[in-house]
Image (tube, rainbow over all chains, first blue to last red; front, side, top):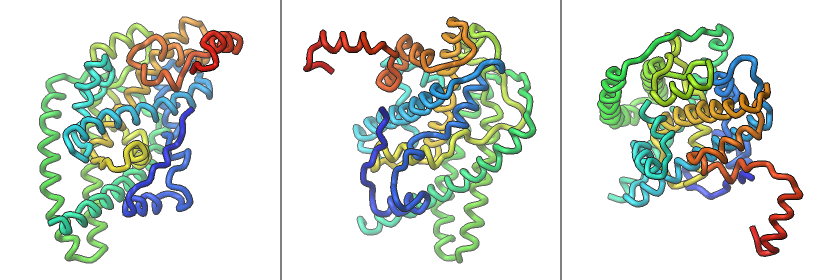
Length: 113
Length: 234
């Protein structure tokens, strides 16, 4: 379902990223998802102590979180390209206005809590 | 002009990556003692006025930081490597302190019935954490890598990473909360894939996840739909 993106990057940035991770591959499957332990920890906080979470649910949420980050990045990227800016700085607030029109009210909660 | 501009962004990029590294370490170090201590949550209701004042203050601090950066850059170029690292650590400490202050005040939903949770999320009133707030839940460098995977040319500032980190946390909380509501309806003890798929199909705000979390369908029904649509279908 979720494919790891393998797009090329600048030489300088590539070097820095490669130094941090293994030099063999730029994108590993591990790097495309957030750690599942952190995800399950947050989920458990929201549920009573007697409830359990299936492993497939955790893995599914792992993919959902990755898709959420990609979704926000795409919205912000479109805004930046429209205004010819290349830095994601305070554009997260602009994502709020965009998503508000598309009934994305829950993201509004995230940034204004 | 163009030649002078090119080296500057490279330096900035390196600094950002280094900062993220140190933050990674901090997050790892911070997590273990918290789990061991098993701190209890204190009931505190943060005031909206305080939030407003804080929101007003943050951009000022950011501006100051931006002003300070070029000066320190100049000093670093002149001085040796060791003081460079010292300066960076100091910056990271300051950033960590501010993060702690912010996070302690951020409200989070308490455990209880689903109705109470829904009301809490809507109103925005919730119990606060203990005295010491957590660091970032997710590793910053991982999020940066995911964002760069989406758009390699995009540059990401530290504040944006923090905002996305918090947004992901809130997203997970709300999603699991709504999934739990469906779990209660089914009267089951274990939260499973079906409940997540049900949330995605019912709520319109989660439409962007419909491709990743489809409802489970029996093979017979799927084959029927496929034959009905014809070979040229999906």
